[in-house]
Amino acid sequence: MSNVYVITGGSGGMGKAIARRLGKRGALLLADVSEERLKQAAAELAAEGITDISTQAVDITSERQVEELAAAAAKLGELGAVVHTAGLSPTMADGRRIMEVNMVGTGLVLKAFLPLAVPGSVAVCISSMSAFFAPRHESFVELLKNPLEPGFLDRIEVFTQGKPEASYPISKIGVQVIVEEQAWAWGQKGARIVSVSPGTINTPMGRQEAQQSEAMKLLLDNTPAGREGEASEIAGAVAFLVSEDASYITGTDIRVDGGTVARVQSAGLFKNRQ
Image 1 (tube, one colour):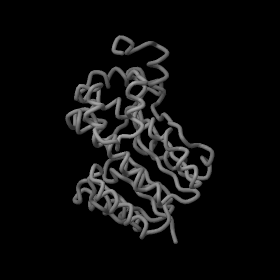
Image 2 (cartoon, rainbow, N blue to C red; image 1 turned 135 degrees about the horizontal axis):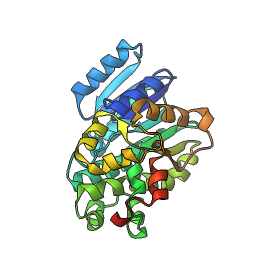
Image 3 (cartoon, rainbow, N blue to C red; image 1 turned 180 degrees about the vertical axis):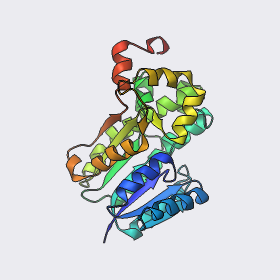
């Protein structure tokens, strides 16, 4: 039985780039909210020679739909990796919906796929460098560990006030916290779990944010690499993390940000915002 690689947000710029890398290793199962976009992505990848592709339209905030995705993956093979790229950025929704997709969705995906984990399986969750620019208060970090607790969205709103610009970085702190919290459970199955924090990346979502945010321009101006990252560079990091070469990396976050966080922290930028 071949390995299956599940990619949520599979029709997005980052999702497709990851699919290009992992599609050479086994069967692909791409999930996204739009069936039409999934078909387009599958056709694009097939034209490049990646043909073992299945797709499934999924709202990751629906427990039933996420469970159906996991069931479909189980039929295709052993879990090589689940790469969870699906999420909303600050200009895409209100604060509550951002938190629901980015946090509750992550919780549901990991809950559904942990039972499929076998030795060598890897879960990769996409966080963001923005998680490093928000204060990490213990009062909400404990809450972020389990976004599936009843009343989570109401309780976390006390800290975000429902604002997208607060909900997004806190949700991405949450992704990192969940990865740290669940490392033991995945490890008990011989599996690993990691998060990746991209910087300013040249994808449709990244461009949308850059056009509407002065802060994004400031971050790009303070990126030591001197440019935006490409989706293929995130895909390269993910390909490494799901390989045997990364077999001792789990329960941690990997920044792929061109050095932006290091520069911002060393130069003391954004301090007045915290």
